[in-house]
Length: 297
Image (cartoon, rainbow, N blue to C red; front, side):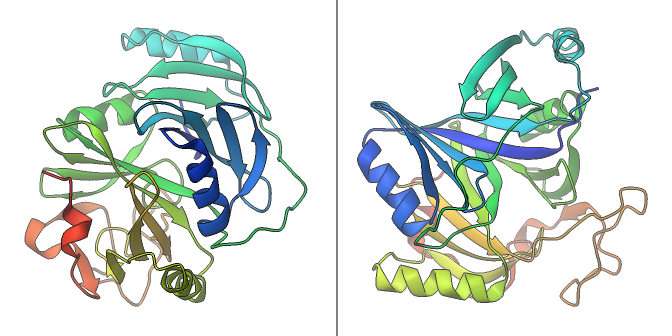
């Protein structure tokens, strides 16, 4: 079975490439690692590729990449996917620092690339803006969250961390509580994406930056329910909902089966479970603003 180890980078189509580059460098605080006429690559300040931007007529999340173990064999992974009815092909040099990937599509039509090798981009470039540690997770609105959970579990080795009712699933591929989320909706699109910060003081600095730039916080600061991360949400240049967060639950030992104990946990120990829909959203903080729900069913 394929074993995904971490989320790599996400690829976004955007109608205004210059505005997108400005947001990711000046607000989010990534470094511009490479730039072409219709494409740009952005990395964290330590050089991990995080975002690929492509000029297109409509904004969308077009692709996700995931790292698999260095020992993984591309031919074996290709056969594994074929056994699940998924056609995959080996491609070369699709992004800086990634010499080879295995490419296919998931059930909702998002391109997926698996890679075993990668290299740092840049040389510890100084950044302005927030300066996240990494791309933490992406959430998608889909018509059938159970189908997506089965695919990511059986095909890519993800584990279910939590459900909210039967309509919102959180899935992990490493110690982080979730790397992908799927929520039920009529239309398929990205729900939000999230970037991990160092700690609560880093989150406070991010909120101060939002205030200075007159970027509305549409929810937060808040401690969420599943995952228990402290978070703040805003909208970017393409109107996507962006989360910055810290203190996400950690599953340090899969055999123990519970998340690393924290004072804010209500369950002791905190294990994967199904949360009641009317009690799951957050533990403290303000409720979401109407702008948080804008454009969602």
